[in-house]
Length: 44
Length: 202
Picture (cartoon, rainbow over the protein chains, first blue to last red):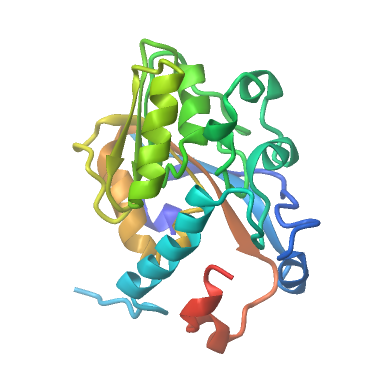
């Protein structure tokens, strides 16, 4: 979606085990949910 | 004009999110399905030399999902918007990085979070940080004001993501950067679950 809007130089970090050992861990594992850092630039 | 069909009603989802995060603001040591506070900042790799000196109240309601500063540290003097600033933690980290010559504007829709973040900013003497009431789909920031937009675990809680990214585009200056933390799933979530608003914050 970011590229569709016009953002460029999109980068994505390594995954973070955001929900590990939390109460939501079971659901997170079921759908392979992880946190990520995203970065992009508006051209100009 | 092409009309996108949203999975859930944006207003209804907003109310659900408010209920969940009001509890995070007022009862930060309660039981949630996600981590909060200082342990979460360690898990997400925040610089503890910056986090450590912050008062507990500035960190305890932090409920991010990644680290917006992991791929790029902010530059002194930059103007920054924190979309969905919650208790203010990421805005305070941003304030540290941009220094007193920079400016940070946090935006949140919850009065309880705004009260908390404003109080923390005052107690830390951060005169270059302010918090405004608003939603990500209509941010109270002028066109092209921001060098950088940060956010953490909030965009995934918005029903109309296209509208949010259009709004981010509007407030960023040409050449400005978007750096945010959010979640992504490797396996598809069943269609019925996507339309079940109760599960968006579960």
